Length: 283
Image (tube, rainbow, N blue to C red; front, side):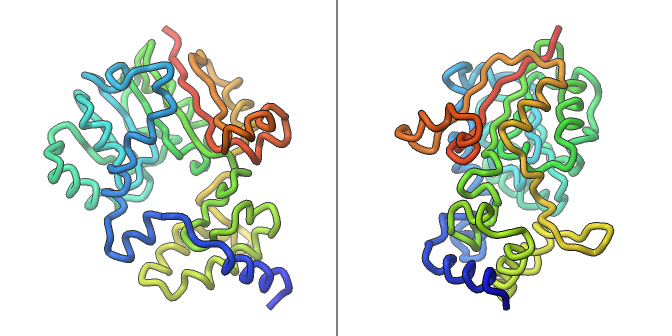
């Protein structure tokens, strides 16, 4: 084992893991879908300075992109939608999503759709509202996803986006096994892949987690394929390439005391916990 590997493993032992839905599900405490449903209100709280829940969802046709097990989608459904679609590339989430929909009495207004965010299986001008919560950092083709959202939104429709930038303390999205903040700033990807695989391999869903997070490129080299390393700077560059009107934009600091650092071009990448924006399709 390398020095970097051993050091990373040592540091991992020093930091407790944050609460993570994968671990809650393995421990039998709650399913991923139930955890998402309970967090549903938190996923939209950053928008409420600009728009009410009613304006977002009441009597709307809604798309939740990168919905996971659709727990949050069903929370949005409970806010009076006309119809809501939860889209995710992982088709296996459908069973869990549909079970929760029945449990909450929302099966008539909800539909799970397995598909890719950069090729949405919907007609033009179909949705009033699209929400992408913690999805911008995961899709393979984020600009194509934005173009597709523009296509399927009705004129005047709203796109709600929030995501943690890559250099967020847990922006590597490994906190189900690694609690050391900013670990991806200190260790290269190959070290992190080795450490992560060793930490989860003996878990009941260890192989599933590894396959979910790690792929091989054309040369056979492993890489973290579930994130695209979306930064604040990159996101704003992508926005400039779209026709959306920006109605609201905010960079939320990790802590109020750190807010001054979030105004500095480089440092803010590590001290912003969430990028939030509301976009409108041109009429």
